[in-house]
Structure formats: C-alpha cells, structure tokens
Amino acid sequence: RALIVALGPFMNIATAVVIFSLIFFTNGIPVVTNYVSTVVENGPAEQAGIFSGDKIIAINSTKMNDPNRIANIINKSSGEKLQITLDRVGEIIEVFVIPEYDDTYKKGLIGITFEISIEKINIFSAFSRGLITTGNIIKLIFTNIMEMITGKVPLEIAGPLGIAQMTGEVAKLGFVNLLYFTAILSIFIGLFNLLPIPILDGGHIIILAIEKLRGKPLEAEKISFMYFIGISLMIILFIIATYKDILRVFVK
Image 1 (cartoon, rainbow, N blue to C red):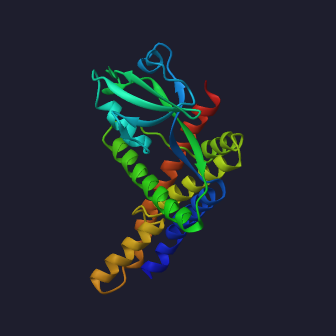
Image 2 (image 1 turned 180 degrees about the vertical axis):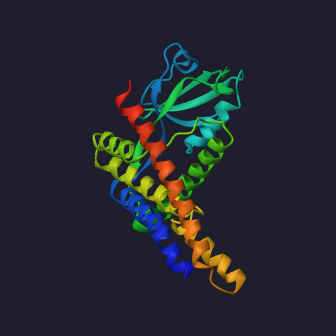
C-alpha cells in the first residue's frame, strides 16, 4: 500500500526527468570550447595580445584541448608568466601572459571568457543528463530548505497567485524556459507531497508505517485527529503563502 501511495510523488519526479531529457535531446547541451569569446579591456589577456576568436591550443608548450584544464592552470598561476599558444585563423601565435589574482574570486584571472557551443546528444545521453539534472535540483531544494530552517536565508513561500505570476513571467522567456519551470515545479510538488503531513502522501506513508509496527490499524479517532492537524497546517501554510503573494504582487 505504501508503494501505491508513493507512486504519485514518484510520477511527479519521473515527469521532470522526462521533460529534462526531451529538452536535452531536442535542443542539445551547452559545451564550453577553448575559443576565446570576450576579452576584458586592459586585462592581462588584452595586454598580451589575445583577441576574441583565438583558440588556445597549448600552455607552456603542453597541448590543451579541455577548456576546464586551461581555466584551472590559469586560476592556479597568479603572478606566474604563462606561455600561451594560440591558433588565430590558422596562424600559430605565441604570447606571454601573467594571471592577476582576483580578491573576489580568490584565484588568478587573465580576463577572458570561452565560447559556448551547442552539442547534439543521443536519447540515452539525454536521459542520463535528465536524471542527473533532476537529482541536482532535488539536492538544491533540500539545501535551500535547510538554509531556511537554520535562518541562513529568509523564508520564501509562493502560493497559487505567486506560482501563476511566475509561470506567466517564465512563459514570456520562451517555451523551453517554460518547460524547465514546469519540470522544477513538478519536482517540488512531488517532494512536497512526501512531507509527513497526514493529508499528504508522506503522511499516509507514516500512518501505514505506524500500523505496520503496531501490527493493527490505527483507531479512526486518531486518524481523524491526525488529518485535522494536517488540514490545519495546510490552511495556515496557504494563508501565509497567499498573504506573501499579495504583498509581492500588489504592494510595491
């Protein structure tokens, strides 16, 4: 019976996996390349003669294909002179640049960003990334909940009005963004339904677990009281969320 009850939240999360997988399969995934996209004015890279469109192919005579490896070397080499080999439209150029330590990011930077390309992937890779993305969002939701409980971040609750407003705003950004939002909302609904509140699926699972441990069903009066507590909590939560929505939408 508990598995049947848990099927609802599971389907919410499974729906998110399917949506993410379809997005990745149809639109591809962003991939960082080792081509320079932007160069910060008066930064170390510009002063060394690096231009947008240059391809970094080696550092200190060591061939480089992975932009993450390039970034790691630069980040760890503040104050050190690096020999960077560039491919500029077929012409091989060597420049020397000294990464400057950035107090904000706590690492060495030369003032460049890399180009992003879109890579098409097969359905199996898309499904794998859909699973990973869903897992990462679940972790993020739990992290945010813990931070709200501990007071590290302010408590933010959105009710029906707030969700409707957010949906409208996201829809303006395009269909893909709306799909992303739908998937995240589906995950949130699935996790919310697993909360141990009697009126929710999580509460039903708790009741079934108690009955399993007792070896007999709970008395109807006790179940009714638990449902009363659950409904009361949901009403309070709804009132708080609606109040916050009204303040957020109408009070500027």
